Length: 143
Image (cartoon, rainbow, N blue to C red; front, side):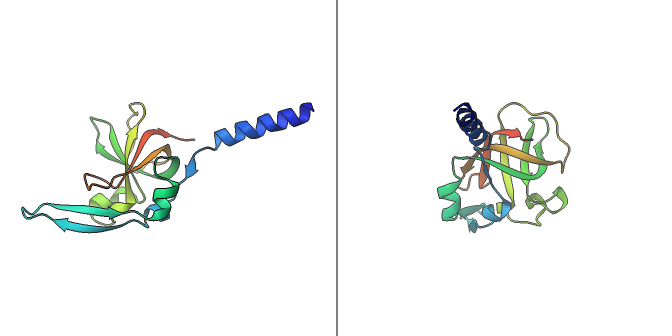
């Protein structure tokens, strides 16, 4: 009986430890978009998220590996990119589906550009074209 109790306890704790969903760039890459230009010449991207991303990942705690790209060093704002800085979205060598805004739970330390990390946090999909398509909030370096 004690063995069954400890086995159940171990399995319960194990499930909690792995509660986040691994997210891979290929799933984010299923997002398509349309480039819109307003009459005054401003351009924005209108994302169209795949059903899989909306139904299984939106609002969930996820993990995602990538390269840290500084957005504003003084404000300690970073993005996570599928690609290193030299070939990331901000350099014009990739699409907007290859970068995620990070909103850290606690003010992060200063990171080196292109530091490869595993991030854990909750995924938000941005539908209104006001910035990047994806945000991971309550973000932490995982592992």
